[in-house]
Length: 187
Picture 1 (cartoon, rainbow, N blue to C red):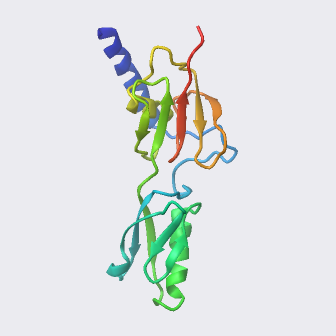
Picture 2 (picture 1 turned 45 degrees about the vertical axis):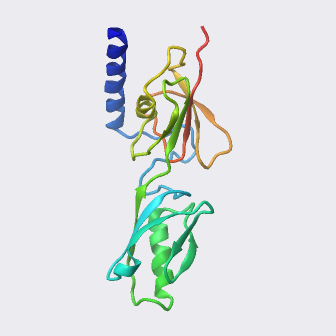
């Protein structure tokens, strides 16, 4: 039992060290990371602030179809856009006959969850936080099982059709909606 506790403590320290710096995800051509260039997706909760218009300020959820139902404007496609691009599009739509010089800011309140499957002690759905590494996601899933392959992982991005096998490093990050699968090692 003591060996398991020491092992989990060691993994937690590695995870915390990995969270301190954000590295690129090597499996994508664009080297995307979750930041200002984050592409919005279905199920994410947004805080939309329309300055000087409290009736248009509030929390909104992107529908399964990728739309955002916004007062006066109606449904607007939000999935696949950055928060900044959506802010600009909402400002433009409100300026088109509704408000004089509208200023809109879009903030992500809750990202899509990440999923950790395979050889972890408690597979499941976990909340995403910016800078989340694969090791931190594994720690949220209560660590590796004794059969886990701890040198490589499989990651499927939300916008990709297939998963990719990637070497597991401390700076390997995940994005909202990613599925991380831990394979079984061969003895």
